[in-house]
Length: 271
Image (cartoon, rainbow, N blue to C red):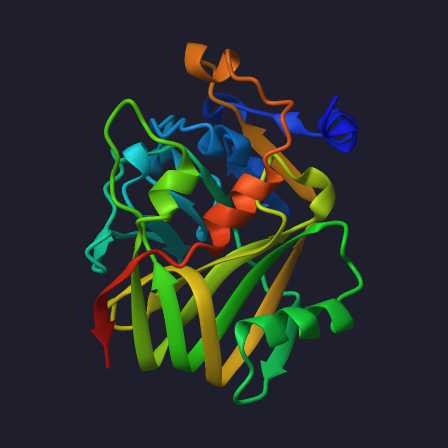
C-alpha cells in the first residue's frame, strides 16, 4: 500500500464541511484545504466549493477554478483569477474551486532577502534557517522582483485530460522589474498525495497586471514572512467521482512534471 505515512497522518486530521465549522474556529492557526492534489492529478477539475464559502476559511492562499480555469491567488481577503491570457480577474462568490489551500495569514517570522536571490536560493535559505520542517508554513514575499516567470492553465472541457498533459501546453509569462506579492505554502514531504510537497507559490503584481503559478524569480528588494500552521483541515469532495478514485498509486513523478513544466510558448511579457 502506498503512502503509509499519510494513513497515519489522516487519523489526526479534522475533515469538515462548511456548515459545521464554528465561527470561533475560523481564524485559528490552521490551513484549510479543498480536495487533494492527487484528485487533481486524476483530472477531477469540477468545482466543489464556492469562493463565497471559501473566504470563511481564509484571507490568504492559492488554488484553481472549476475546469482548471487559471490560477487563484487570495491576498488580504480578496480572491483573484489569473487566466491563460495572463490577465488578472476578480473572483465572484459564486465561482467554485476544485482545489485550494487557504489560511488567515499572521506573520510569525520575518526574513529580509538579499538582492539577486532566486527561487532556488530562497528555498535553500529557508532550509537553513527554518527548523519547523514537519509542519505547514504560509509564505508571503513582498517587494520588487528583477525577474518573475509564471504560468497559468487554460480551462478544460470534459472528458478532462490529466494534469501533466494540461501543463505541457500551458502559456508562460515573464515580467521584469515588477512589484508584487508571492503567496503560497510549504508542505512537508510526508503528506505527498494530499498537497504539493515542498514550496507551491503563486504571484500577484501590485498593479494587477499579471501573476500566476511561479516557475522562477529573482529578487530586487523584498521581505519574506512566514506563518507556522500546526493544524490542517481538509474538505473532501463527497461525490461519486472522488469516491471511486484509486488514490493509493504513487503519483509523485507526475506531480513533479506538472509543477516544473515550463510550457511551450510565451504568451505575454510585461515591463
